[in-house]
Image (tube, rainbow, N blue to C red; front, side, top):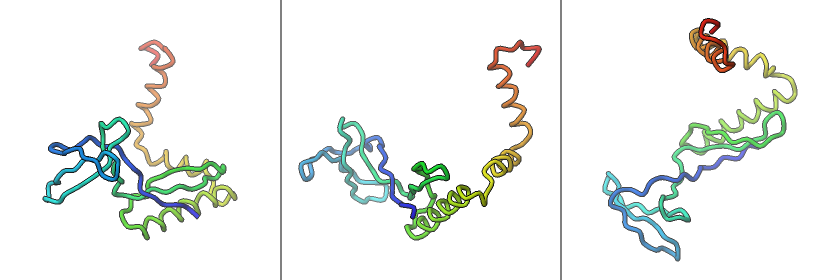
Length: 135
Protein backbone atom coordinates (compact mmCIF):
# COMPACT_ATOMS: atom_id res chain seq x y z
CA UNK A 1 0.00 0.00 0.00
CA UNK A 2 1.27 3.46 -0.88
CA UNK A 3 2.31 5.75 1.95
CA UNK A 4 1.21 9.39 2.00
CA UNK A 5 2.92 12.24 3.82
CA UNK A 6 3.47 15.98 3.70
CA UNK A 7 6.95 17.06 2.64
CA UNK A 8 8.96 19.38 4.82
CA UNK A 9 10.14 22.39 2.82
CA UNK A 10 12.78 25.00 3.56
CA UNK A 11 11.51 28.54 3.05
CA UNK A 12 13.03 31.97 3.72
CA UNK A 13 12.40 33.50 7.13
CA UNK A 14 9.39 35.86 6.81
CA UNK A 15 9.85 39.61 7.15
CA UNK A 16 9.31 40.82 10.70
CA UNK A 17 9.91 37.39 12.26
CA UNK A 18 11.68 37.11 15.57
CA UNK A 19 13.95 34.19 16.38
CA UNK A 20 13.14 32.59 19.73
CA UNK A 21 13.84 29.35 21.51
CA UNK A 22 11.04 26.85 22.03
CA UNK A 23 11.68 23.52 23.76
CA UNK A 24 15.40 24.03 23.36
CA UNK A 25 15.32 24.61 19.59
CA UNK A 26 15.44 27.85 17.59
CA UNK A 27 12.12 28.91 16.08
CA UNK A 28 10.93 31.87 14.04
CA UNK A 29 7.74 33.56 15.23
CA UNK A 30 5.74 36.00 13.07
CA UNK A 31 2.24 37.19 12.26
CA UNK A 32 0.88 36.21 8.84
CA UNK A 33 -1.21 38.37 6.48
CA UNK A 34 -4.45 37.24 8.17
CA UNK A 35 -3.17 38.38 11.58
CA UNK A 36 -2.61 34.83 12.87
CA UNK A 37 0.52 34.06 14.90
CA UNK A 38 2.80 31.51 13.23
CA UNK A 39 5.81 29.55 14.51
CA UNK A 40 8.21 27.30 12.58
CA UNK A 41 11.56 25.67 13.42
CA UNK A 42 14.75 26.91 11.80
CA UNK A 43 17.12 24.73 9.80
CA UNK A 44 20.48 23.71 11.28
CA UNK A 45 22.21 26.78 9.82
CA UNK A 46 19.48 29.06 11.18
CA UNK A 47 18.92 30.74 7.81
CA UNK A 48 15.54 29.26 6.78
CA UNK A 49 12.35 27.97 8.35
CA UNK A 50 11.10 24.42 7.88
CA UNK A 51 7.38 24.07 7.08
CA UNK A 52 5.10 21.27 5.96
CA UNK A 53 3.81 21.46 2.40
CA UNK A 54 0.10 22.07 1.90
CA UNK A 55 -0.39 19.10 -0.43
CA UNK A 56 0.31 15.43 0.21
CA UNK A 57 2.99 13.36 -1.48
CA UNK A 58 3.17 9.59 -1.73
CA UNK A 59 5.82 6.89 -1.71
CA UNK A 60 5.25 3.72 -3.72
CA UNK A 61 7.14 0.96 -5.52
CA UNK A 62 7.25 1.33 -9.31
CA UNK A 63 7.13 -1.51 -11.86
CA UNK A 64 10.88 -2.12 -11.44
CA UNK A 65 10.59 -2.43 -7.65
CA UNK A 66 12.25 0.93 -7.00
CA UNK A 67 10.85 3.20 -4.28
CA UNK A 68 9.47 6.43 -5.79
CA UNK A 69 8.08 9.72 -4.45
CA UNK A 70 5.36 11.67 -6.23
CA UNK A 71 3.03 14.51 -5.30
CA UNK A 72 -0.68 13.69 -5.26
CA UNK A 73 -1.85 17.28 -5.72
CA UNK A 74 -4.42 16.83 -2.94
CA UNK A 75 -4.88 18.77 0.29
CA UNK A 76 -7.35 16.22 1.67
CA UNK A 77 -5.80 13.13 3.30
CA UNK A 78 -8.48 10.68 2.16
CA UNK A 79 -8.36 11.84 -1.47
CA UNK A 80 -4.56 11.80 -1.41
CA UNK A 81 -4.62 8.17 -0.20
CA UNK A 82 -6.97 7.23 -3.06
CA UNK A 83 -4.68 8.93 -5.61
CA UNK A 84 -1.64 7.19 -4.11
CA UNK A 85 -3.39 3.80 -4.29
CA UNK A 86 -4.25 4.47 -7.97
CA UNK A 87 -0.60 5.34 -8.72
CA UNK A 88 0.57 2.12 -7.07
CA UNK A 89 -2.13 0.06 -8.82
CA UNK A 90 -1.00 1.41 -12.20
CA UNK A 91 2.60 0.50 -11.33
CA UNK A 92 1.50 -3.06 -10.45
CA UNK A 93 -0.42 -3.34 -13.73
CA UNK A 94 2.67 -2.21 -15.65
CA UNK A 95 4.75 -4.78 -13.76
CA UNK A 96 2.38 -7.59 -14.72
CA UNK A 97 2.22 -6.45 -18.35
CA UNK A 98 -1.41 -5.32 -18.38
CA UNK A 99 -0.31 -1.77 -19.22
CA UNK A 100 2.34 -1.43 -21.92
CA UNK A 101 4.71 1.29 -20.70
CA UNK A 102 6.19 1.78 -24.17
CA UNK A 103 2.76 2.41 -25.69
CA UNK A 104 1.94 4.70 -22.77
CA UNK A 105 5.09 6.75 -23.43
CA UNK A 106 4.30 6.97 -27.17
CA UNK A 107 0.78 8.19 -26.38
CA UNK A 108 2.21 10.84 -24.06
CA UNK A 109 4.57 12.07 -26.77
CA UNK A 110 1.74 12.05 -29.32
CA UNK A 111 -0.11 14.64 -27.22
CA UNK A 112 2.78 17.14 -27.62
CA UNK A 113 2.52 19.68 -30.48
CA UNK A 114 4.65 18.97 -33.55
CA UNK A 115 6.50 22.29 -33.10
CA UNK A 116 7.87 21.05 -29.76
CA UNK A 117 9.13 17.88 -31.44
CA UNK A 118 10.80 19.94 -34.17
CA UNK A 119 12.42 22.27 -31.61
CA UNK A 120 13.77 19.24 -29.70
CA UNK A 121 15.12 17.72 -32.92
CA UNK A 122 16.77 21.01 -33.88
CA UNK A 123 18.41 21.23 -30.41
CA UNK A 124 19.54 17.58 -30.74
CA UNK A 125 21.24 18.30 -34.07
CA UNK A 126 22.86 21.49 -32.75
CA UNK A 127 24.20 19.66 -29.67
CA UNK A 128 25.97 17.17 -31.92
CA UNK A 129 28.17 20.03 -33.24
CA UNK A 130 26.57 19.95 -36.68
CA UNK A 131 26.93 22.94 -38.98
CA UNK A 132 24.21 25.59 -39.06
CA UNK A 133 23.39 24.61 -42.65
CA UNK A 134 22.92 20.96 -41.62
CA UNK A 135 20.77 21.91 -38.64
